[in-house]
Length: 68
Image (cartoon, rainbow, N blue to C red; front, side, top):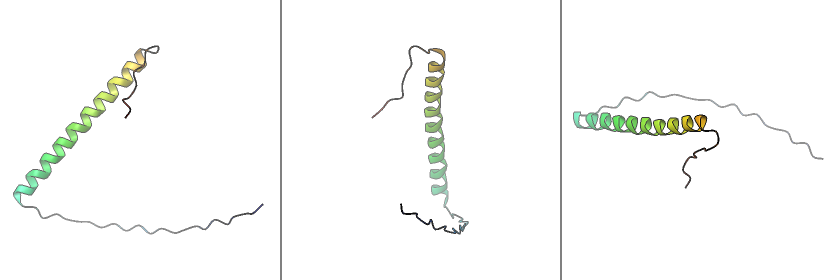
């Protein structure tokens, strides 16, 4: 039986800070995008919480997540 020697790799992670210089129109659009994304996240989170709460209360009839 062949034995394999595993090589270890050292990974160096670098971080960069970036500052965006936005005009007023771009700044407003970014804020709107963030608000819509937060609303969509909270909506989906609420649906999942309702489904999990329903399944916890009704052990015999469980709902499932939609599958595609």
